[in-house]
Structures are given as structure tokens and as C-alpha cells.
Amino acid sequence: MYVGACLVQIEIPGAESLKDKRAVLQSAMTRVRNQFHVSIAEVESQDRWTTGALGIAVVSNDAVHARAVLDRAVRFLERARLDASIGEVEFEIVDVF
Image (cartoon, rainbow, N blue to C red):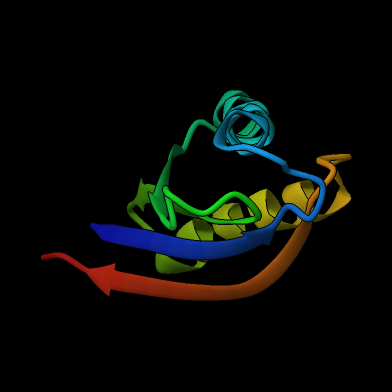
């Protein structure tokens, strides 16, 4: 079994409050969760208005499949109209057993 994890840094220059930021991130998380059936959450920078980080995780019996799902989710975020820009993206695939 393989666990794939991805950390996506997001810049939200138009956010003027935490409420603005959360609206953008919640929309993104809901769309990714529904489209790809992955786990996704805001994982860093919860107190900053213009930056955030999303953690995405997937479990698979194939490492290549896990990476492909994460790649597609990140590309989806890049193409989505989020009023935000995607920054650094880090991937990790772990063989659990």
C-alpha cells in the first residue's frame, strides 16, 4: 500500500481578511475533494491573510497511480479560477507495508 502526500503553497493577493482567504480555500478544497476523492485540508499559515497551504493525500495499491492522482489534483488547482496562484508544490510517496 502506498500513501501519496502533496503540499501546495497558495498565494491569495486579493484577500483582505481571514474570511476572504477561507472562502477561496474552502471552494478549492471542496472542488478537489469531489473531483478526485482525496483527503485535503488547510495545513499551514492559518493566521495569514494572503498565503495558505493545502495538504492533499491519497492511498493506493500502486505508487505510480498515487502520484498521478496528486499530479491531476494540482493541475486542476492550477487551472481553476481561484483568485489565487499556486506556488511551490512538494510531493512524497511512501510505501507503508
